Amino acid sequence: MPLVSAVGEGSRMTIDERSQSRTQLLRGFISNYRKTRRSQDFFFTDADRARMGATAIAAGLAGLGGIAVGLSGMAMDTTEEADLLEFDLDGKPVKAWVWSSVFKEGDEVEVVAERSGDRWQGYGIRRITDRIVALHPHCSRGRRAHYRAVFSLWAKVVVPVVVAFILCGLGYAYFRYGSDVNWRGVSTELVLAGIAGGGLYGLVAFRISSKMMGFVRLAEGIFQEFGWKDVKNIDLPAITKKSKQPGAPGALGVLYFRY
Image 1 (tube, one colour):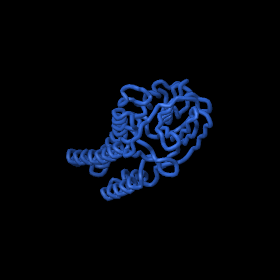
Image 2 (cartoon, helix red, strand yellow):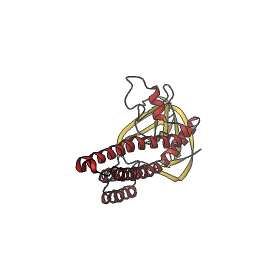
Image 3 (cartoon, helix red, strand yellow):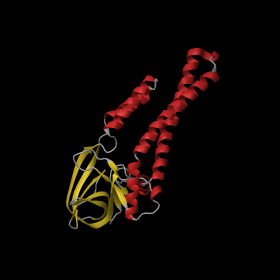
Image 4 (cartoon, one colour):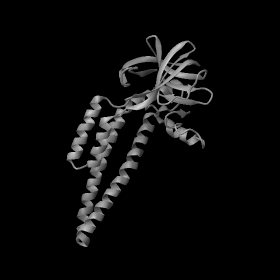
């Protein structure tokens, strides 16, 4: 099936949905293996950072300082480290970006790749012997699993913050005004402010979630090429962590997976 392609070395890695090409599942033994750890921005473009900077300014003017600081930090730098792999697979030259590689010379692997000029651009690599999987950065979940993960993260962040904000506001009102305070009015204002703040965080989460959909569709395409079922519900971090044994590397289930 067609997969989205990626911009290669020498520029920021992005998902380009306009470029569609046929992919294949290659299988063979790795030779002439080379791994280079590099910093790239796989996620945000310059335009994305500019928009987040504008949102941070608006949040600051609205008095939401914590949100403004967070967005400003995201707007400044979102580069991350990943492994650029180059190897031959039974005579076929392959290049692939993955979050973290534990492969080595001589490994028998399956590679989801598409032809790019005189070489193959890889998106997912699976080692046959132990089912270790390394994928293009940010490709680890199908869309339903992605939405569940985003909602769970939003709830874990927003609910405690809103509750703490309301309790602190009530405590401040009591210590400043004593028992004469209009508790109903103060509580209503605090709850509405908390809902507004949570809604703004929700908007940010939605924007980031939407930005991730290119990676999610790419992940689903990789899963299908591997022959996996129910790709929309596949959550590689969750699946890997359930079977992770004590003493296993910390990166397993975070930067590479087992399926």
